[in-house]
Amino acid sequence: MTVKVRSFDEIREQFETYIGDIVYATMTTVDGKGRPRARVLIPVWETVDGRPLGWLATYKTPVKAAHLAGNPHAAFSYWSPRQNAVSVDTVAEWVDDLETKRHVWNLYVRTSPPGAGYDPGRFWRGGPSDPELHVLRLEPWRVQVIRGADLQGRIWRAD
Image (cartoon, helix red, strand yellow):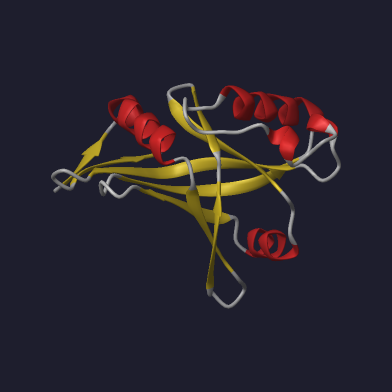
C-alpha cells in the first residue's frame, strides 16, 4: 500500500536512512528517441527549506550531457537486498560555479546523508576547481520510499 504525504519531513528520516545504507543509485536518463540509459553513481542529498535537494559530482560524458540537454529529467533508484527502496524523480541541471562545487565537495566528504558520499579527491585530484569535476543539481519533484518488510510505501511530491 502506498500513502501520499504532504511534507517531505514525513519521510525524511526513512529517506536518509535508506540512502545512507544503500549508497549507490542507478541514474536513468533518456536519449532523443526516448530510449533509457542507466548508470550507477553516488549522489549526495541535503534538505533545503524543507525539501530534498540532490547533487551529483560526475564526469560530463558525451552521453550524459546529450541526454540531459534533450530532456533534463533523471530518475534515481536505490535498492537493498532487504527490499528497502527509494525512487527519486528529478530535474537535473549542470552547475559550474566554484562556490557550488566547494559546497558539493564538502557534502561528499562529510557524507550526506550519513553513510553516502566518498573522498572526491580520489577522482578529482585538483579539488573543487578540477576542470574534470562537473556537478549536477538534482531538483526532486517526486520521492518514494518503500519499506521491504511489508512493502509499505510513502510518496512525496513537490507542489
